[in-house]
Image 1: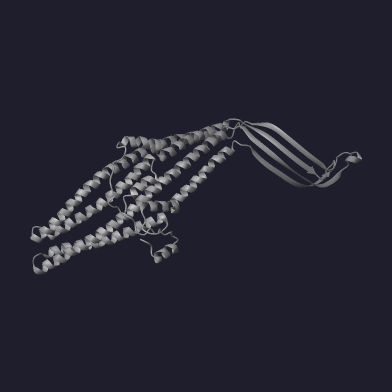
Image 2 (image 1 turned 90 degrees about the vertical axis):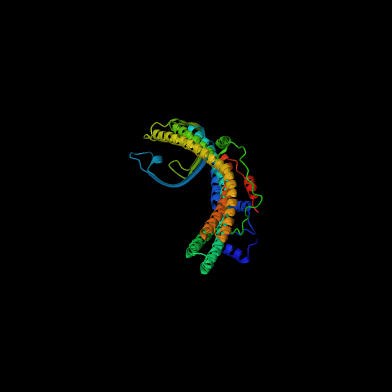
Amino acid sequence: MKLTKSAVAVCLALGLSPIAGAADLLEIYRTAQSQDAVFAAARAARDAGQEKLTQGRALLLPSVSLNANSTYNDVTTTYATEMPPLLESNTARYNSHGYGATLVQPLFREQNWAAYNQSELQVVISDAQFKLAEQDIIVRSAQTYFDVLIAQDTVQLTAAQKTAIAQQLEQARRNFEVGTATVTDTYEAQARYDLIVAQELAAANNLEIKRRTLQQLVNGDTGELNVLGNAFAMENPDPADVQQWVEQARRGNYQIAMAQAAYQLSEQEVARNRGGHLPTVDLVATYNKNTAGGGMLGASDTRSKTVGVQLNLPLFQGGATQSRWREADANREKAKQDLETARRNVELQTRQAYLGVVNGIAQVQALQQALKSSESLLQASKLGQEVGVRTNLDVLNAQQQAYATRRDLYQAQYNYLVSLLRLKAAAGTLAEADLDRVNRALR
């Protein structure tokens, strides 16, 4: 289904990027990769994190600096005692200038080595954060997509239920007019009709919100969405053992990888602050050239070259070094506990996702059977009403049960598909291929 010219114009006016034709889940995901601001921010954060390694390596490499100066001098020399004519008091005005270069190569700086090790860990953390963002946008794309589908289903089911209740209301009014039913039947049908009208308005409002949320994700109008088709099929997790999924999550989950790197980073921070007590040794080489246009002995031109080893031993800094060491040690303990928390949370998330898949299959199957029973009950209630053994209220209740069961079935199917993706994400293996398999169930 192509977007109309007016729809495209509206999208462009709002700064949106319309998706041509009906959109499937994979197309939504790929568009979100280039349009979603959250994912774009994660990509920029990853790029920024990569620079930490260069900055850390720079601490181990030589540094070179240049300096230059130009000075105007006005010097008056007066001697307190009588001097030979050559050294009598005089005034000299002249310009002096010079330039120089200094090279410093660290030979021993424990703090710099710790900072370099920290930069490697910071790159690991930024990579893990981006991997998490990649998995998150897959799950968010699917969740947002199915949120729109269930909202559409709710609108359609509510409209169908409204039509059915309107028919019951009309029948109740006719029966009351001919004297075969009481006014209570009319009141019951009218009350149900008024309620379903309110529910229809709420469903339409919810659908608009869900569509806007999807548009925000892809920064454009998506048009019609593909829905679940006959290709929908349920499969048990492979392997069918929750403990194996937990073990895989412990090895591959990026939240744990980030927490592990953060703990190692805190250990290096302890080492870096411990290095504040240690001496530093640098190789220092300098070159300077200075020219003076005058002075007591006339113009001069001076050049100097030096090469040497410089030792610096910190003795006391007001207690700041010890304080930073204690702070780093406390932060290391915090990072250790954060790592344990991450492991426990990931284990819980993995078990929840696994149960979401397994129980989702059972729930879908149960609701499929419940839908058959509800539809049979509805038909039986309508027939019973015709022969006088069922009331109008029985039919209304059966209708409501049938529509509610169908909506619950749709929701369970969507939840099952999202749980599949969440399980792979918890294990750290979620990729576009997994989303493609879900997308095949749509038509």
